[in-house]
Image (cartoon, rainbow, N blue to C red):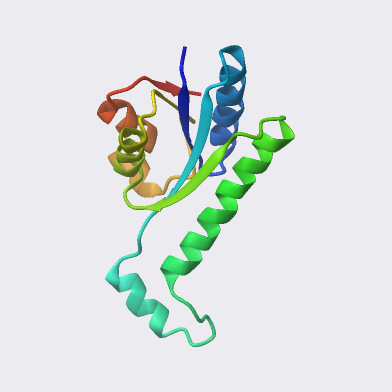
Length: 146
């Protein structure tokens, strides 16, 4: 069976279903380690310049996005805790979602990725392909879409 399961988590209903599935899958075997990963996109220089002209909104966009990502991953951890699963690790990374998920899974030696088939992606996802589609094409390990 699997020993380490990565769940890319964006807080969407699909990602929540994938997390619950991964937790159930972990309980079937000998208790695979479940790891949550929330990825946020680094903002562009244009977005950075726009943030400088908003005096009523201090702070930069990366900090805001990182803060939101932390809230999302904590939401996922709470779902796991409520399900009686206290061995979940959670991480936040910045970068292109699919490639960051793949790199993280390779660096950590994961042997399964369980993710939602549709997340909170932008219009770019509809035009260029979803993150789940890209992950299934790039991954060297099994990917289970929920």
